[in-house]
Amino acid sequence: MAPQKPSGRTARSAGSPARVSARRRHRTLSRNAIVQVALQIIDAEGVDEVSMRRVAAEFDTGPASLYAYFDNKDALLHAVLDQVLDQMPIPDGEDWKSMVRNYAHTSRALLASHTDLARLTFAHIPSSLRMFDAAEALLKGMIESGVPPHSAAWALDAISLYVASTVYDAYLKRTRFSDDSGRDPEELRAAQFLAGVGQAFASTSPTRFPYLIKHADALMAGTQDDRFTFGIDALIAGLAAQAESVPERSGKSVM
Image 1: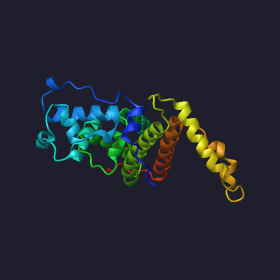
Image 2: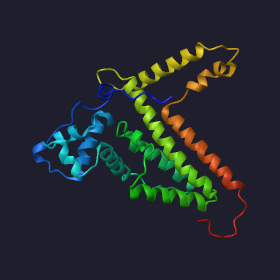
Image 3: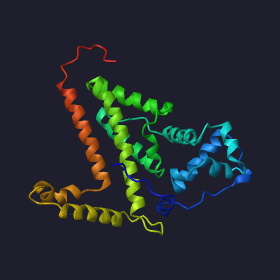
Image 4: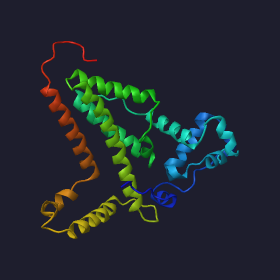
């Protein structure tokens, strides 16, 4: 079941001030300026609060003025996303495993810094050359270290989906368990969420679900960081096992 999107009010209560500070008289309408204003709205209130009318108002103009730069709201949102993706780190590390691990953690931090922007990455074809540079570096590192090309290619998709879904899930939990004061008490959120999971387990039949009941503590243990690290390390271990199972290469190109 797809998660319900939080309302604009909920998103606002969890984050920054409800309105983007406007300096309209000092703004010149341009593609980049429009993208910047849309990103400011997203950072303050979330993706759902962006509209062509809302963005245009920050320039003291009507929404028709924006259509000279963007065909519609979706085109604007994806331009915002691509601008953020342009900040993606180029993977680095002593070996391909550390490259994957470092990239996953840094890209997660980047997306998490922009409220629910991560949801826009789903079913999106990126046009960011920086994103392509990152993918090229990861693919090269994995393949040249013996990871089968097919597995390395699919791993890029798995990493992207895992990072984005983890960030968006954290955003949903943050908005769901924040109070009207806008405070963001992580321990309280975690306690509320785990209490709900615990109640769900407690209501099940111990004869039908003996392992769920017996290992309920393990199922609910760990922070979001712990769980994210576990997932990335498990993916790396699987790729490493495939690399080790490939017969010794004879120096031929694997591109």
